[in-house]
Length: 271
Ligand SMILES: N[C@@H](CCC(=O)N[C@@H](CS)C(=O)NCC(=O)O)C(=O)O
Picture 1 (tube, helix red, strand yellow):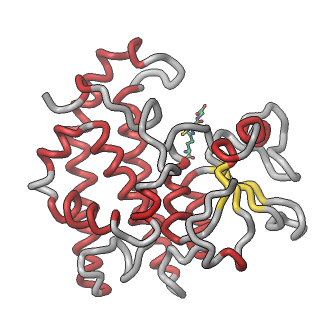
Picture 2 (tube, rainbow, N blue to C red):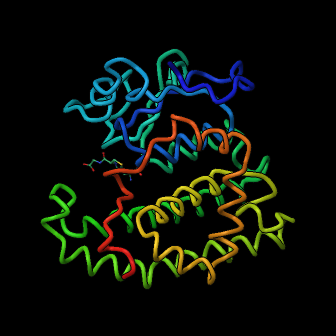
């Protein structure tokens, strides 16, 4: 059954389908958080539909020259399928790449500043930066080869994670804090949001990466809380309380972290 965070905007939206791997939050989570924060229903195909993962595989991981419904090929999940939004206005649209999906949904879900083109690009800029950090965290356990086991690249993983924890996290965190401060002055955001005066997908995307880092590197993140309290305490706690998100985060739809992008290997955390 489709996730029904709230029926409030249901009438004005197609039945969006998130195409992603089952059982892990992964990059699909950035898209789920956008829907959940907006209170717009979507189908999480691999997790909710019988044989849903074979649909995901057919569309996102096939050997052909199209994904589905005359849409171009997709490199890998996540993808979004939107019935009725294809070129002819009848077939489905299939788009991929997490930030591309978020950019598509941003305006439709009310998760970008209204009538504000620079604001929309700023939201995308912040989200892209958070996704860069997401990729760097992924590389802490897979620094050499994506298709090989962590155990086969442990020595390099130790070096990579030390560098990410010691140098990269503080650089990203200070950028996000500067963005919060900029927004406080620019739009009266009161330090609550990254762009503008209401929730955007920049907030949900940064929040998810912070949350993932807290799972992957609990000791490192605890130590960093004092230095980056505006981000890791105030912002993090505020976003968690947003309507839609608060309910979702304690629901069964919120999947636990396991062997996806964010993994907890104690040896890769601060010692
Ligand atoms: N830049 C892409 C990365 C997509 C990606 O790496 N997807 C993973 C799952 S989170 C995958 O299935 N990758 C298969 C592969 O790279 O071969 C995005 O943000 O969507």
